[in-house]
Amino acid sequence: MDAIALFCSALAGAALTAGIYQFMWKRRMRKLAAAPEPGSPPQTAPTEWDRRFMAFHEAGHAVCSYYLPEREPLIKITISPSDEAFGMIRTAPRSHHNETRVSFASTLAVMLAGRVSEELFLHEVTTSCVHDLAAARQLAADMVLSFGMGSRTGLTIPPSELNCGETLRDRCDADIQEILADAARSARVTLAAHAAEVKELAELLMEKGSVEQPEIDGFFRRRRKSISLET
Image (tube, rainbow, N blue to C red):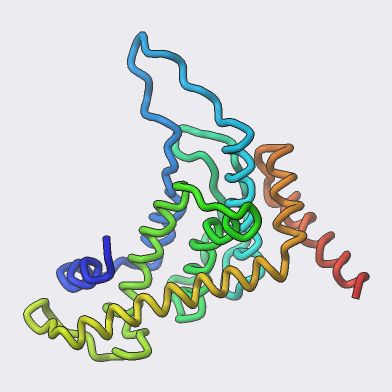
C-alpha cells in the first residue's frame, strides 16, 4: 500500500490505537508454509541460510529495542519456527497507554531494524520484512493523519476525503516518507554503534534458537560492562 492509499485509508476510518500497533507488529506472521494437506510431501526445515538471516534480523530488532528510548523491556528473542512466525521479539506490556512522538519514533526504528540489520551485516535484504514494513507504514501514516505529528502538516488534517487537495496530499505524503526515513536512519545509526552486540546476539540465536529475559538482560549487561572497560 503506497502513502496515498494509506492517506485515504486513514481518513476513511478511525485511527489505530498504540496497543493495536503493538499487536499488529508482534504478529509479524512470517509463515513458513500453510498447514499441509493430507498426503502432501513433508515441509522442509529452515536452512542454515534462512536461520542466519533471521538471526541477524531479530538481533537487529532486539538491539534497537534495548537501546532506543521509551521502549518496553525485552522478554524473549527467538528464531525458532512456530505455528505463527519464523522469528520474533517479545516485550513486556507498557505501564501506560499514551504514546509520544519519541516512543512512536523508537517503535518505528525497531520495526525497520530487522531489514536494516540484514542489509548492514549480510549485505542483502529478504522478504521477511514484509509485515514489519506494512505496520511501519501504517503507524507513520497515522502519526501524520491522526495525531498531527507531521512537520509539514502539523494540525492541518482534513476531516474527509472531500477536502483532500493535491497540495495537502503531497505534504502528507512527504511527512510520512520523512518519518520512515528518519526511523530507518535511527535504526542504522544504533546498529552501527552496537555492531559487536548484533553479531554476538545473532550467533547466540543461531546456537540456541531462543533466549529469554534473564539471559537477555545478562547479555546486554556483559556487553555494556565490556564496552565500559574498553573505554
